[in-house]
Image 1 (cartoon, helix red, strand yellow):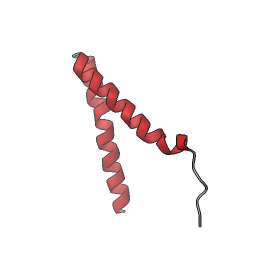
Image 2 (cartoon, helix red, strand yellow):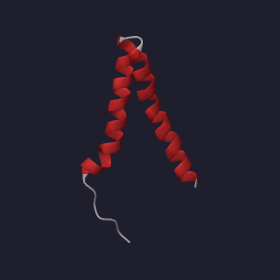
Image 3 (tube, rainbow, N blue to C red):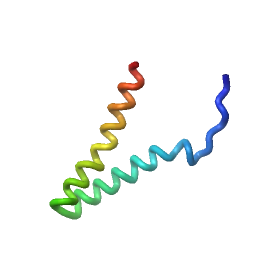
Image 4 (cartoon, rainbow, N blue to C red):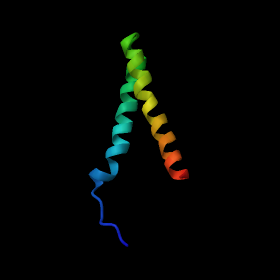
Length: 60
């Protein structure tokens, strides 16, 4: 069964969001302390969590 073609917006939405969160996290880590450190930890944890989720889904 063939899948219908997907639009580029649909294909690249998640990677773009992960990349933007990573960029926000890196800039926050480099430019400030306190709240920005917490923001950077949270946003930089997202790609790690996504990879963990993808590995778990792929194995099952």
